[in-house]
Amino acid sequence: MPVCTTCSTALPHLYTLYSSTNIRLTPCGSCKAFADPYIEAPPLSILLDLVLLKPGVYRHLLWNRGSEPERKRGSLPPREPDFWDGRRRRTLVVLGATLVLADAFIRWLHLRPLHNPGNGLAPLEANLTEVHADASEAVHTFLRTCLGCLIETIAFHLGVVLSSSIYLRLRPDAPRVPAILIPLALLYSSMTKLSLLLLLSLFPQTTALPPQPALNGFLAFSEMPMQARDAAGAVWIALDDGVLDREWVVRSLLGGMSAGFGLRVLLSSSPLPTTLLILCGWGAKTAAARAVGDWVVAGGGARRHLYEQFSIP
Image (cartoon, rainbow, N blue to C red; front, side, top):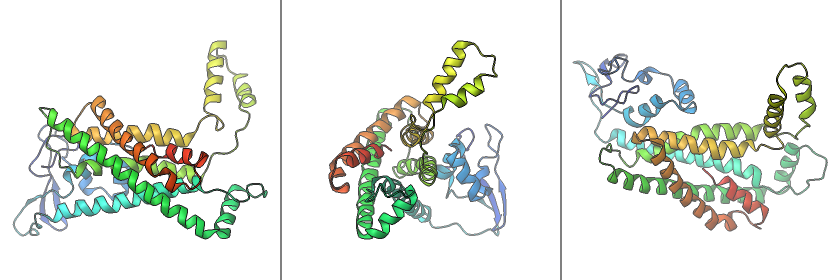
């Protein structure tokens, strides 16, 4: 049953359909807002709200997409009952394949060894030289990384789905959640993480510069107390590229929070249970990464450690 994207109240219909180009949005009886304004929103707005982790867009994509409207005489006939179920399955496959390929590409950029690290070329030029010199190895590495990412993603989703099923059975007031919506919520939550990781891959971290002179020049004109200046200096150094691993922050902290947020919106649960559910999925994914790590990363060593580090959802 569709729900209001603002207050999660169950509603029989989200809009009234008069013709293919004439609809009227239904107001919610509880919060008096439109039940689902995303029905008329363009795809770009939905994508931006999804990246910004807005609860309403999760309710629209998970609960409301495909719901039947209230039909007036002369409107289009209703679709087959299993039409939207098939569309959800196709969305799950297409979105899952796209995110697995994006994750594999990001890891592949870090796992490829450079044959000529001291040739004086820029990092991008060195990477392109390696691809042209040994394209076969690069392709094989990418294919193994894709398969490894697929196995890890399946393990992560199975861990979360199984633990969520147990949690919903033990919860007396649990909502009825179709099993297919749980992996869909996790995939939608991954959009934020992978979007930022792709940007960081296109614009990698630069060599760290000494931050203290710039900080001293800024603080010289300020009237902050000495303790505040020391605290500002510590924060400045902690945020330097040579100290802070931005990809680790995005993959670990933001990835975990976004996955827990999407699951919390779907299950209407508090943060603590959803955190435990995500940790169950992380455990399954870490076990899968260690099982296939030697095969994906030929040679092991530091590259395998890097691969396992990137296996965090």
